[in-house]
Image (cartoon, rainbow, N blue to C red; front, side):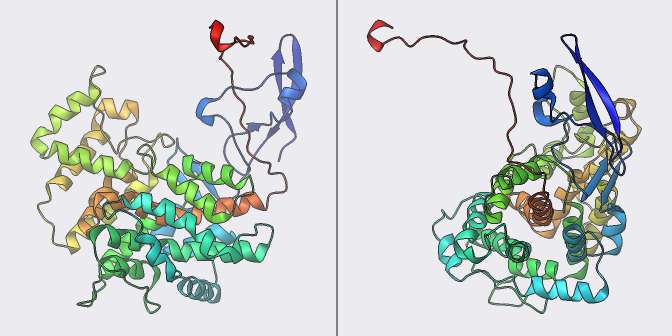
Length: 429
C-alpha cells in the first residue's frame, strides 16, 4: 500500500484522505473517516465506483479485457488445467503440486454424496418447480443437515463446509434437474472425475449405462472454470454481505444463488439463446441489427457488451472455441443458431456502431448454444452457473471471514422521504 493522500473539499473544509494502491489496477480513496471529518457520505448507486473490500483473489481490467485468478490469466487456466485445480487455486492462493491436487480431488470426491434424507426434502417441491428455486432452498437446507460445520470461528469447520459445498452443490444441481424431468436421482460415482460425475448424475438412467463423452466433459469443465469467480459482482457481494453478519456458510451461498437467479446476472446466456432463436436465420439479422441501432426501439442484442469488459471478453474467446468443439463432436453441422451467432459476431467485430459502443460478444453469447447442444434445458443454465461460481463465492466468503478489518455491511443512504411531522389521530385525518 502506498502512502499517497487525496484532498476532499466540502463547505470550505479540506480534509486529506488516504489513497491506497493495489498490486495492479486503479488507486482507491479510503473514505472510511469521511463522515467523521465532514459530516457527509458519498453517493454511489450500485457501488460502481466503490471498492467494498480488499481482495487477493481475482483481478479484472475491463478496458484491456483481462481476467486473472491469483495472477494467472483465465485462458491459461481454462486451456491447460481443470476445474478442481482452479478451485484449489482460488481457495489456497497457489496452484497445487501433483500430491496436493491428488489429495484435494480425493477429498472433494468423497464429499459428493448428500444426506439420504435430502431426497425426501426434494419431494416437497412441485414437480414443475424451477431448478433455481430448488437450489436456493436445498443449499440453504444444508445447514440443517450439516450443522457440525457451521461455526465460522472454527477454521477447520470453515474448510469442511467449503469442501462440502464444492462437492455437494453439483449433486444437488443434478437432483434438481432430475426432479423437474421426473427421473430418479443418480448417485455420484467416485470413479469419475468432477465434471464427468456431474454429467453422469444429470443424464444417466437406471435402465442403461451412460457413456461419458470426454469432449463434452472437457467442454463443461472449461465452462466451469470460466465462471468460477468474477470479482465483486452482485452475487459475490451478496455472499460477502450475508457473511458479514456471521451467517453460516450454507446460508451465505444460498443468498448468492438467489441473487444469481436474477436475469440481469445469471440469466444472460439464456437471454442470448432466446434472442438467437427469435432471429432464427441469418437473413433476418439486418432487421434486428437495425432495431438494435434504433434509439427509439427497446430491442437490444443479448450476449453483447459487458458491464465491466469494455474490450473483448477474455472468456468469450475460449467459449467460442469450446462451442465449435462441442458442435463438431455432436455432428451439428447446419445449426441455425450457430450460423446466426457467427454472423452476429462478424458484424459486432467489424461494424463501426458496435466498435464505437464496444459491444463485443461476451461469454454468455456462446455458452448458451454450447449448453443447449449438450442437452441441458435453458432452465438449467443458471444452475450450472451456480455450480461453477460456488467455489468463487466460498473463496470470497473465506477471505472476508479471515480479514481482521471486516465489519458487518451497512451501506448508507440519501434520504428523500418526508421531513419530520407530527402524528394525527385517525379520527382527525
